[in-house]
Image (cartoon, rainbow, N blue to C red; front, side, top):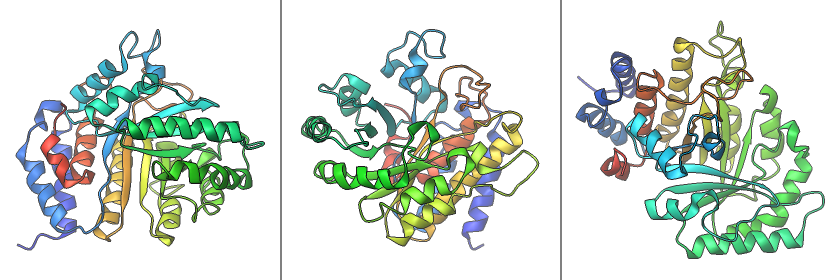
Length: 344
């Protein structure tokens, strides 16, 4: 029987559903997914990005799910839970923060572990600052000379109202600081459908198409669909990816999770549909010969359940999202990642 891509996807989804209640060990080390993925790779011509996750520093605080742990311990707990290596992670710097050593954001340890780090910075934008540009260059020089594998974004999620940055100001940030970043690392525009408005991505992204090396989006369930009763995405990923494709640049998802503001936070059925949508969208890009950037699960902020709509972390080995994440990791990671299927 001829193996079509559709047959493969149907089989993969069926495999995931059948193992959804079996815990992590049901998928860890299995040769079945490896065989399926080999078939998929044979059918794709695109560029794979790393697949990983982010356990934010906020999760390490008192009262949070990783309270008292080091970043390494929290990352190891994530890897143990999902049975896959954290090949990439996202790290944040406050406005005006330009670290002068490798301990901030655990950068030195990520270098040692061979983890790619997608780093965000917030230099002054009203007005731009020569001092911030010099400090940014010093930090990036330190990272580069220390062997960090990184991509860099400036003012991630700039369309969020809390950032109070206009599209024009965003363009100026990339015009002024961008050349400095690109001397050391690829420069990424990482935006979101803030307030479920596509324009909060597109209005900003369209102004920097000639200034960046990659595009990425932070994408959550509450942007995916209006409510649990509709299967039509409110803010489909196409709107963001089309901008990257129009200039032939890679596109990635730097944050994703099933979080949503109640009552639109998903149940298992709708959360599963969201995870399948993210995976299939990025698989389709590979099949079309396009380039993917990094894809990273954002493992919550602090509480086990966030009533304000923040993403919910994976804490239990019976979490239904674990086999879904494993399938996504297996299908979207670079072929060489199969050698590091399980955590180091």
